[in-house]
Amino acid sequence: MLDFDKMGGLVPAVIQDNITGQVLMLGYMDQEALQKTQEEKLVTFFSRTKNRLWTKGETSGNTLEVISITSDCDNDTLLIKVKPNGPTCHTGATSCFGEEESADRATGIRFLAQLENVIQQRKGNPVEGSYTNFLFDKGINKIAQKVGEEAVETVIDAVAGKLETMKGEAADLLYHLLVLLAASGLELKDVVAVLQERHQK
Image 1 (cartoon, one colour):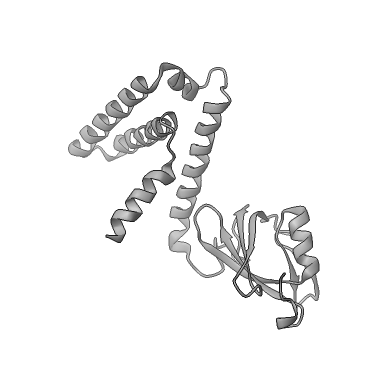
Image 2: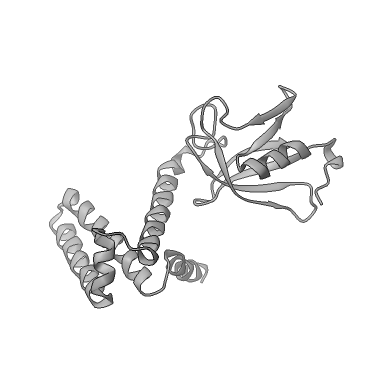
């Protein structure tokens, strides 16, 4: 049970990008704002300056779609993970904390997650004419072969200094690797977990 009384009827809510982990902003909620957020799945704060409920993006359109809501150990602070629709800060920045240097990286991470999700969906729900489903139908040997081919082509362009074409080959390699992971029953997070474990050592 959240302790709204500790701060005079309000609790701070830390807003975090669900995919990238980037902290986007901090706001305050009363019980009504939290209830509205839970019901509509869009982050709504209690604006202390306007003295009313305020749904993020109600004028700009840059809403925050709720993925999950958790409270801290003292039940007086919320962590809300979201899918941001556009920049969060009123300045046009991705984050209100001035972390723009990580914005491009954050966008890239989010797209990779979306691409992996599409690939996983194709695996469970085939779409006629889909190249991804063509690969799944051919089987893991064909997919593994494609990963090898794209890896070789990436290396050739790298050694030759052909950076423009190398980007395309690297993109092909990354895509086919995601398909191979899906075909093997793995996800990108499984690979990242190994990297994280190695980094800690």
